[in-house]
Length: 266
Image (tube, rainbow, N blue to C red; front, side):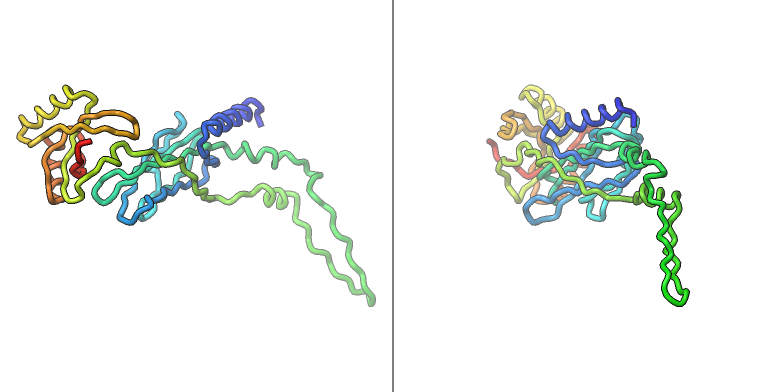
């Protein structure tokens, strides 16, 4: 194995391990898997996966990820050595984000682990044929045939074509605003969140001019010790109605919208 290449791989792994993260090791061309952990509560959850890091030379895209029927598990085949990292957003049946999880992988070439196995000499393979065993009455038994050198070599270095490794995950990140009290029976539409009241006011005014009943809500995120100003529209008893209105706003403003519960001022 190229010594400088080996040192680079070892240093990369040590640096990543020093960050306190669980790194999942794998091999180029072999299947790898990651499984999201559901929240510790009952309900129906949706899992949205994304690639947040991969080697520059990798051609892997989100379309290449194989999802399980419930979207809780992904599988992929790394096409280039290096660091890959995947993130999953776990949302409840109302579209609220309840957790996020990250899965890092350190992928190496298969040559990097097989070179030592392929370097042994021919004389290292046992080539001793047991002597024939003779008994009385000139009866003897032929010894078991010994595999050829090529057969022994193939058997010693062959690997399964497909191996699956279930990834460990980083601790779930706190979701900003998840602890703000909410009204479980009413819904609203959020269009944006601004750091200053002035910026939020501009967004709210543009929505009012478009005919939407917008308002601004101050939110303190104790998870990050930050204050944001949420620009929101309406108050709905029906979740499906809120989703329909959100789609109309998104179509007119060309911006993002999502449905949330009515939150109490904090």
